[in-house]
Image 1: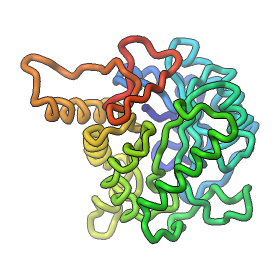
Image 2: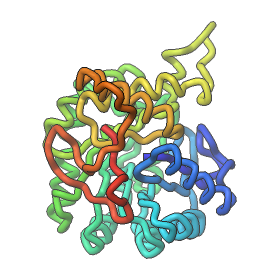
Image 3: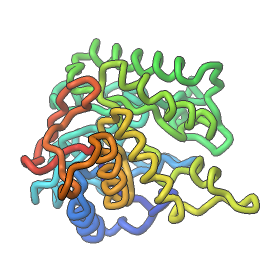
Amino acid sequence: MGVINVTADSFSDGGRYLDHDAAIAHGHELIAQGADLIDIGGESTRPGASRVDPDDEAKRVAPVIAGLAGAGVPISVDTMRAPVAAAAIESGASVINDVSGGRADADMARVVADAGLPWILMHWRPIDRDNRDSAFTHGIGDVGGYRDVVAEVSGELLAQVDSAVAAGVDPNRIVLDPGLGFAKTAEHNWALLHALPTFVGLGFPVLVGASRKRFLGRLLAHDGELRPPAGREIATASISALAAMDGAWAVRVHDVEKSRDAVAVASAWRRGGSRGAGPQRRTAHASEADGQDIEVQGADDTGAVSH
C-alpha cells in the first residue's frame, strides 16, 4: 500500500502533494514501483496535528482519488469521517482506511455497510474519551496506559469488529491494523510487531503501518538525535519483510520499491529460492494465514497485496 498525504503537515512528506497534479503523478510513480493499492489521506494524524475541516479534507482527496481511480488505480481513502469517506467512494475509492477504527464518526459504519467495501479498522485508544472532537488527536507523550499491550489491543480490535458487524458491515470485508505509534510507546510498538502472528490468528487480514515512524527514528538515534524520517527507509523495508513472513496482508509504506524488494527477498528465503526467478507479483488479495479474500476494485490480474 503506497501512501499519498495530501496535507500540509504530515510528519514525512507534508506539503509535497497538496497540489492535485503532483499527488496524481506520485500515485502513478508508486504504482510503477509496484504498489497494489494507493492510500490517500487529507488530514495528518501525526502527534501534535490538529483536525482539519471536513469540507477541506474532502476537497483535498476527492480530485486525487478521481484522477487515479479513473486511470484504473485501486484506491483506499485514509479518513475518520463518514462524509469524507462518502465523497471518496463517489470519486472512486474502493477501500476505507479508518485510523479510529470507526469510533471517531458514528455514521462511518453505515457508509461502509451501504457501500459494501473493505474497511480497515485501526486500533487507537483515545486519550480524551469524553470529547469526540479531540479524542482522536495525540501528542508525542500521550500513551494509552496499557498493562498488556498485545492482549488489550487484540481485545479492543475485536470489540471494534463486533460494533462494525452489528452495524451491518460484512465481517469478510474487515481488515485489522494494530495502530503502531498511535498513543503507544516504542516498546509497545515492538511488542505488537513481535506479536504479529497473534493478530493474524484473530482471523482477519492484518495491515502493518510502520513506515518512517518515530519509533524507528528512536531505534536508529545517534548521539541522542532521532534519525530523520528520510533516513528510516531501510528499517521500514526490514519491517515489511518480517511482517510478510509473519503473514501480514499488506504493509503501508512511503517508498514502495524498497519494501517490495525486501518482501521479495523474504519470500525467496521462505521458499528456499527459485533458480532464475526474479521478484514476482502475487495474484491473490488475501492473507496466507487465514485465506480470506479482500478484493480491491480496480486491481487487475497482475496486481496484488504483497506478502
